[in-house]
Image (cartoon, rainbow, N blue to C red; front, side, top):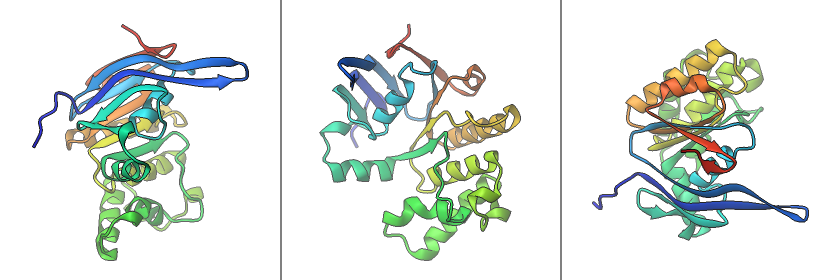
Length: 226
């Protein structure tokens, strides 16, 4: 197996947008690396470019220029189907807005990422129930999202992100809509997943989340602050 220096490597990453007649640079010549098994926060104020950076790390947004390598794969040299396969195999996403399907139960929401796998129905069921139990919601697996609190919905989002056992978990403001006690519980859950071997990258504007990370990266005006 080929050995790589870093699990994630970002080289000269730039993302620009057209805003009317103006060209806005959201991410500006970013270079960084993240090692396998790290827990990293990307910290910055609203509009600093941190969420745009996370989207490019997760193969959700093509950069204007630059490279993102994950496990030695140059993501944006891959075709559309290859990128979809990469996201399915490598990445679990956790979004601030949860993005749960309102008419599906907790169990059905968690099973969604496995829809494209060749796993048998019972295997998918067992894997989904195992992660639902892991996040403390086994007794609510048949509830709909609107029957859950915000913290419980975030736990469902975490369970959905980890059900395929991806090596990399990307979280965009996972505690942004939660009270401080619930936020601490979610961060402790991510910390435990990191101890289990997942590489965790959390975008946040909340300094309190930095305490859970092994390393903190600060972004300002689209650049990594030194």
